[in-house]
Structures are given as structure tokens and as C-alpha cells.
Image: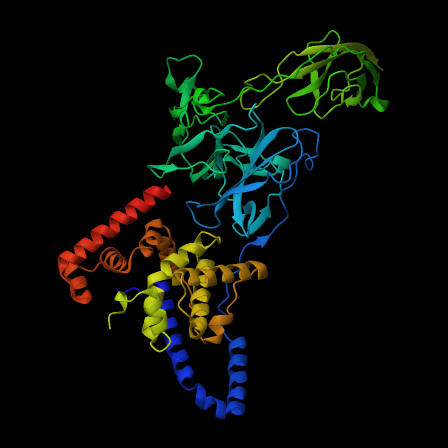
Length: 423
Length: 183
């Protein structure tokens, strides 16, 4: 072979070094007699080496600031809750990137408000994170799910989360910042300009549930079979960006160019529904995945989702007190909760409606509440509109099969109403 | 002596007095080690730097090497892991072993980087390195070095049909392994 590769050159260097080492070992007994002189020579050689060319010309990734908590660090008993110690597991840390570099990994944990969470990023020095500029590693701390690939999803009645996410991302593991169908320059988070066309990876990840034993996915033009991880059915597939499947929406115009086009694969569903995961084998049978925009995905029937038990709700009615916060900062609402809230599957909603206007805003009091305790919250009035408002408080719970977002079912039970004039 | 026929253990013991034996050991595992680092660091130059330091470290430890119950490959990857961890701790690849061996730095130009990238893109290479010695030698000689069956047979002192059989079995094993790993 005429061209010598770097690895072959290294082999030649190593053989030469091995020959020198063999020679020096054979000369070792003689060297003992000349120890003083040899030591002086050795010092000179080492000194010359230190001043000469260095091998270590390349540096590894440097550490940048950790990815920020966009809405603060998780707090026990509030919002999606805080991670439960002992449930945090790095289920995958060796998913190769098609362009090389640190592997991709997936972390899973449960929270005290009955959510199962996943985080996906690049693995470097045993940590999960994102890489910017090809050289700077930003750690993804436990609980960061905004500004990262991941999220928290309500546990089903059996205590397992089900989710399937199909999304574009950057090779540094940053999530996409704008819809796939629009290839324009948009403002990114926190005002940073982000070009939408820099997404160069398609990432599929999620939780197939405890009943999934095997799944087939398509990557690089071939089908691969893999085993879900961690007893929760975790999976992660990273590949070069795939062309999204697009379909026509709405009316069909005579001029096809005027037809509306949009994605045919959901970003998020309860079970896989994208072009990547092809087949899932569950304990009860196998499911062939087809592309569907259903929020429940293609394998809802076979996945083994256990319906979420509905809390027993007795009387929730309570008097509501409301008054204007100083300096027009909003409306303060007070009421004594008769129904307990112990996790994210139920909550109190405070709805504020300007009288005589169609608009309204809703704020979910998303934290645990003991029965009989006083709920105190302030609803901000972003429009600073003066005049009369109607405040409606509802107690809402999730449906037994709520879909991927697990939102609380509307309208819920009426707790009470109040009326207030904002000066 | 045909070094390709020796086991890893035999090569390492022989390498204490025979530099070519270490060269043979290096050629057998260079792709696997480079690939190991390529999956853990961001650029191919750093991976190459770590590979060089790993083999230099192995060469330096050679006088103290004793055959273990486990495969020598595990010993080599132990050195690779320690090299990586130390580099991560210090934020830079160390060159202590290479300096001690007075090895010359290898400057990489763009075509070298492209070559390394190309070599690392093949997960099959890693699978090939885990084949039994006779199959690995035959597969690498035929499919990587581009040698004919006749040349390989002459070098390995066996018939062409034996070489064909080894290549065929080796490829079948690699295919099965890649399929099982879902790559």
C-alpha cells in the first residue's frame, strides 16, 4: 500500500520504541555499574524531551456552564415534583452518534408527584449533557427537562410511564427550536437567534412500558432489533436527520402548490407512531407500528397501559375569597381546600374571566394540598385591565387514559365562584 | 516465525525480546482501541492521541505483564480506560508513556484525519477484531489489505480453500454479531 495511514505510522513508531526498550532491558545489568553517569544522561534526555515537540496537542471537551433550569430546580410536592432518590438511573450510555464523538445516553427517574421522567444527551466523563461548538460540554443536571431532550410524564395505574418522542435535534443533543416544517430563521429561546435548518439528527426515545420485550427500529436504511432497557421499556435511537413524512391537511386545492402540508408523525405520543420504530414485541403479542397522528400512537391497545385510578372525590365546594393585589399585580385568591391533592393527577384550577369579555386565563395550582388547608395564590393580570372579573375555582383530575400530556380533564368539579372589581 | 498465528498472550510474552511481536499485537487491536476512543471523545485526532498513549502505556508495562486468566484484550482496554479517565480528569491527553519511550510525535494533516474518520466509521472492524485469530487474520488480509486468497494462503502456509473457509466463517460471525447488536 503506497499511502501509510496514521495508525500504520503509529505502529512503526511503536515497533521502534519496542526495539529501544528491548535494547535498554538487555543493557540494564551493565547500566547498574554506570548508574551515576547514566542518570545524568537520562536527565538531559528528559529535559530535551520536555522542551521539544509535544504529543498532547489535542485537548478534550472543556466544561461549560450547566444547562439552566428554565423554571427553577424541581421542588418536592410542586409541579412535576422532585426526583425520588433511588429511582434515578442512566439506562443507556453507549448509543453511538452517526458522526462519532461521545455516545448518547438516556436517564430515567420517578418523581414524588407520580411522574416518570427521561433526559437524553451526550455522555461525557460519566455525565449526561449537551455539547456546543463541538468542544464545550454542558452538563444536564437531574431534573432539567426544558431546553433538553426529555420530559416528565404521568405514571399509569401500574406506576409506569409510557411515552414515545420522535424529534429532530442538533448533534450536540440540543432539542429542536422550531417546527420541522418551517425552514426559516426564528428567534430561539432567550432571544438567541437559532437557524431551524441546523437540526442534523433525528432522535427517537421514550418508554415502552414494562411489557415490551423487544423492538425493531429502522436506522441507516436497515432494520435493527433491540431490547428495551431498565424494566421500563426505555429506548433511544439516534441517527442522521431523516426527511420527515409530510401529508396534506384540510382542503385539496386545484393547484397542489396551494395545499397545506404538515407533519404526518407526531412529535409525542403515548406509544411509537413514527417511521423509525417499526415493530414492538410485548408480553401479550407484537404490534406493527404505523405512522399515525393519534396522540395514543400505534400500539396503545397492546402496550398494557393500566388506567389511572380516579381519586374519590367527595364534596369540593368551598367559599372563594378574591381581592386585588397591590399595584394592579393581579388578583389574590383564597379558599380552603376540602379535597386533598397528593400528586400531579389532580389539582385546583383558578379561572379568571373579565366580565363582559370572551377572554379568560387559567392557572393551575400545581402543588400538593392537604384537605382543610388554605390555598393562597395570585393570578397575574398581564393585560392590566381594570373592571369587574369573575373567579371560578375547579377541582380537576386526569382521565383514566389521558394521553401523552396527561392534562387534567375539563371542566372538573366546581369549588366555588367569586366576583371582584379591579380598580 | 508467523506472528499472526500466535495468540495475544504469546505475542505479549514474545514482545519482551522481539519488537515485531508487539507490532503484531498492535495491528491486531489498533482499530478496536481507536474505535473505543472514537465513541468517547469528540474528534478523531484526540481519539488517535489516546490510542497512541494507550499502546505506549502497554509497551511500557510489558516487562511486568504476566498472562492472566482473562484475555489480554481486557488488559489492553484497562490501560485504555485509565488513559481516558486521566485525560478527562486533567482535560488533556497525557503523553507520559510516549515521552518515556522517546517516541516521535505524529502530525496529522487533513487527509490523515479523513482516513481515520473513514476507518472509524465501520462498526464491522470492531467485530472483526473479536474473531478467532485465524479467521481475523484471513478476513483482514482479504477484505482490508486487499490480498488475494493465493497470497494469504502462501503467507499462512495453508491451502486457498482453507483461507476461503476462514474468510467465509469470519464474515458470517461478524454479520451475526452486528445483527444481534442491532448495528
